[in-house]
Image 1 (cartoon, rainbow, N blue to C red):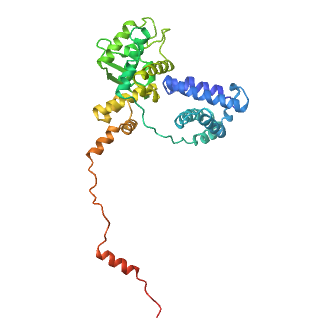
Image 2 (tube, rainbow, N blue to C red):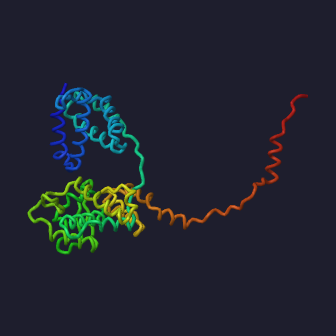
Image 3 (cartoon, rainbow, N blue to C red):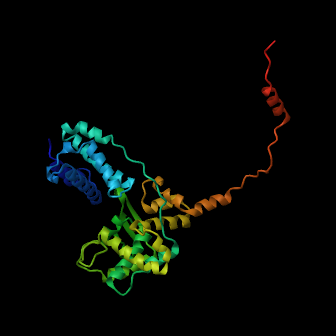
Length: 337
């Protein structure tokens, strides 16, 4: 029997950040997945987490864990697949370091991903977006920061991880005309900034703490804004914006909805899915096609250029030759002599 803790520590602290050069977000996501798995296995086995052994994480245990996060925690199939991907990655790591686990790893690799429903991307209309961007007050330091965060998150279509890790030196501080973003998969892109966005950033930089962390957006303690911190800020201002636009209350306003909103509005303005993909930093157009399905204008334009089929209503009347053939085929020959 082999203890899990040493190998799991080596996987998270050495293999991912050093050998694979995975981003801190990937490491955090994997660590959270194993935190859930270890807690579930410890409860099921009635042992302490550090006492769990690798052999105890067999296929029945992994399947029970996946069922647990869907049924008990209410996670979607997409989240379930993300947890399973972390487990698969760990057992690939074990294959070359623990020969005795090779058969166990092969069995766990055989656990398939579950098909997930692809829902339409939710986004805000123009009026809803303006109400949300105008929700933060202008006479407080936190209001100035929140206004700059919302404007930049929408204008640059930033993921929340890209927003909270953005540093001051990634801005063109002389002209405030562009921002350099390190995106998912270590793909770097440079995006121009609108005048309104640049103005809100200048106002924020004028009041921002000078001795805080190097990140652009800081909390009250002078540390970098966290994901949960931005989620709280966004939900707070969404409640305020709902007083001006009640339709916002019917939508689930998440940090990613600003990215979806930017994509939809860019698609409607340019009518070019390739430009949307370039703006969002997608690796392929396949990731951007969800916005074609969500945009009703694309369907209306396709419908406008299509001519309806010119079919004259009436009853079908077959030609005489067809009737003759049918009569001949329907005649039964009498073979009784």
